[in-house]
Each structure stands twice: as structure tokens, then as C-alpha cells.
Length: 59
Image (cartoon, rainbow, N blue to C red; front, side, top):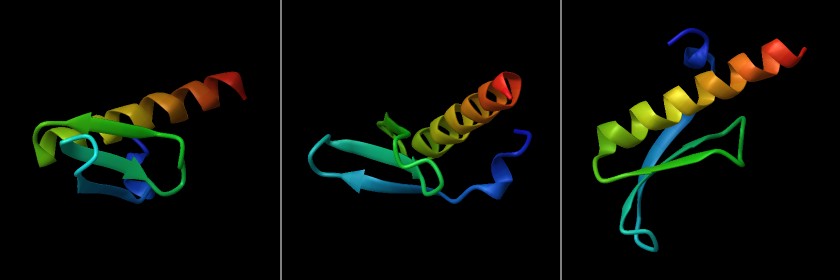
């Protein structure tokens, strides 16, 4: 995943959602819910990469 290694991704269990929650410190509005820890981590990384790619495309 190009460029996502520069961001602080974190996964924790969300009691409220009953799932693992992936977040990224530099983009507090982004999150990703998944049943598994690794799926949440991969999901937040993909989402971050998509957002960064879109930001670059928009200048």
C-alpha cells in the first residue's frame, strides 16, 4: 500500500459496536469496523490509501 506506512493506524475492540475498530491518528474522521483484528487493520489501511490518493488527485 503506497504511502500508508507514514500514518499511525490503530485497531482496538469497540464494545459499543461489537467489532474491531480501525482508526488512523492523522485522519480522525476515518474508521473501519470488522469482525477480525487483521481485517480492521487492512481495511483502515486501504481506506487511508484511497483518501490520500483522492487528496493528491484533487491537489
